[in-house]
Image 1 (spheres, rainbow, N blue to C red):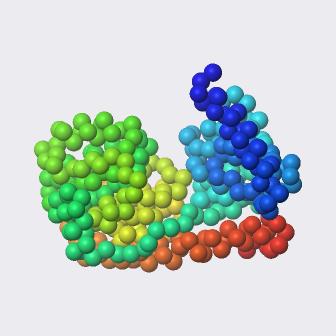
Image 2: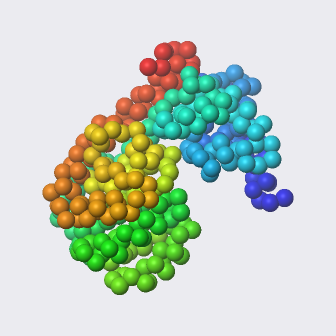
Image 3: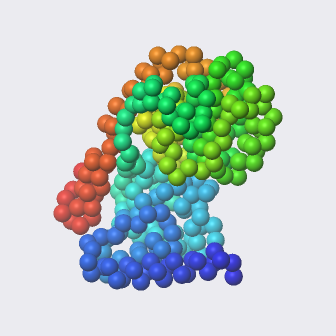
Length: 319
């Protein structure tokens, strides 16, 4: 057996055993993602007559449900998971997938992820100082944070960057790692001014990179939520993004520039505009911090979770 197949029963047994052990001390269970550990805890919750809610963490062909269904008795396991009392979905797209997979809408709560970090707008002098500290040039800085994966739309970013670099005094900062790291490294070596593209690899805490940058570019093809967009907005960056994940939930009031998926012309225009117009960058960045603080703070979202927990326990209406 492969290590993966050995991990499945072990994690299931651990989840079930731990669930039985703690059931006498808790009122309800909250599972994070559809995993064997979570399935074991769900069965323990049923045995001990405790309600259980499960947070769905990813959707699509590589998402939670697809992974469960994609091996052996996965369809049977998903039927067991569907017995949970409530599912938390970070966006309406996640809720739609749950409904299409047989979950009743009344057992789904659409709750966005909370922004736990500090929401603040860095000054120009702070940005310059951080660029020096991080070994970056003092230019208008475009930032991408996330996995280097084909699904992130990074081919479009690589397509437009040479045109931008030839016309503007800007630099590109790529924070993350993944299967496209080799592609990025080879691409960078072929650029006329490769010193203006920085590949940092994975960073456990990218906060300094957010605060050292001016523009956040996120051309992703699909997202379950898009935490990095929220993080970038909380640090006052001007945002250019595709309408994926949580961005799909926002109307015209959101202080972001949306471009079509794979639309290199629109991406170029948006980035040119922001690079050339410091006042527009500052305006969008200032509005972004207010937007995030009002919608994605920990306190209001935690209060919503608390009301749902009370509803599961029969102590409130969940509103």
